[in-house]
Image (tube, rainbow, N blue to C red; front, top):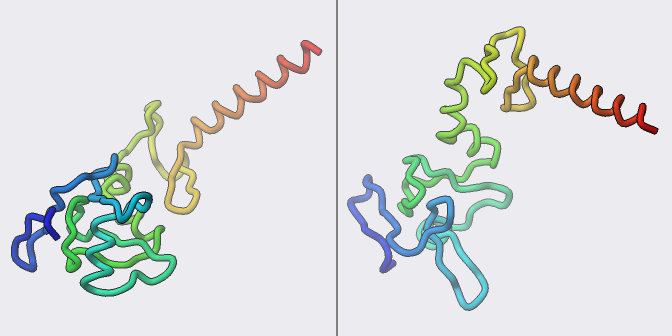
Length: 136
């Protein structure tokens, strides 16, 4: 792999070639097929990624292609482990300032949402619908 800055087995192997918009290394095989550099490294140095699983960067470095830093996991687990998920979980209030407490927090899977904001959106939607119906 010519586009890799490689350290020892425990260090990240940083992809220095082209990267996609999210910062993951990528390259083309042939004319049409784009391949994730980390996926290619894992499949060629470890083996096939089981069907239905994603590769999670345990090191949290998207440009890393060290197969020792990659673990096949479900998409749900990969998202749960993500840095953005940790950042969102640390928030104590919604963007409008309502608290994320037991009474005001709804959950759909691993996603939480503000009940006060949802009530406001529903009220606005009902008022808009009522205004449309009265114009008929």
